[in-house]
Image (cartoon, rainbow over all chains, first blue to last red; front, side, top):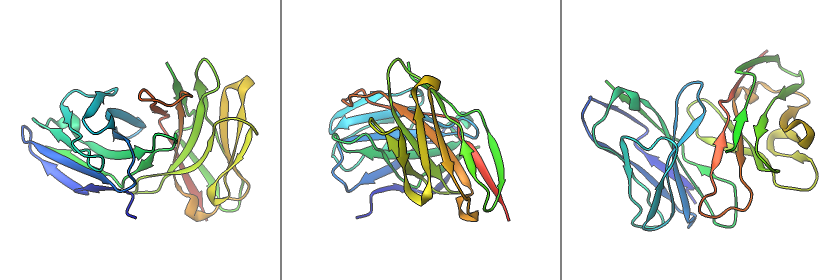
Amino acid sequence: NAGVTQTPKFRILKIGQSMTLQCTQDMNHNYMYWYRQDPGMGLKLIYYSVGAGITDKGEVPNGYNVSRSTTEDFPLRLELAAPSQTSVYFCASRDSSSYEQYFGPGTRLTVT
Amino acid sequence: AQSVTQPDIHITVSEGASLELRCNYSYGATPYLFWYVQSPGQGLQLLLKYFSGDTLVQGIKGFEAEFKRSQSSFNLRKPSVHWSDAAEYFCAVGAPGGGSNYKLTFGKGTLLTVNP
């Protein structure tokens, strides 16, 4: 049981490039979340999903897109990378009967 | 809207000393409350949670937290800190009831340094 996995662990992008951050969970959780963490700022919610085919914006969605075609996967897409997107990105999931979120190990992204 | 304040950005304690990390929340009723720990380069791990009932909750790694409604606080404590407790600690609040709109709001974190 791997829990929540994220790939890649690290990535450096040039301004204007695109990439997809992968997130997979094997706990059959309905709810999945994407956060970004900036130094001294805590975690900010980017997007979340309540099940396959259903996504919604969080607090800081601009510059990002998501999709949820399966229960297990919740990829986060950056279309035109900007330096302001340099951050550590965390994916999390939870079961519909629980309020505890389980976090992945994170992806550290640098945009230069 | 819910919010969380962690007044201390950085705390340094000596190994073996007691620890208290402060957390204050803003919410119209009693929220769900959580403490997470993040070791360097790692994701967040849940230490403990409070939903209702006994206001003193026990968590993993010897941590406990006390919910005080009158002070809108949920402070984290440990009687004797170990060097391995050095990490960043996040308090989080969620609105009761769950559902599709249930989201956690995190504080900005408190970085704990442990001196030998």
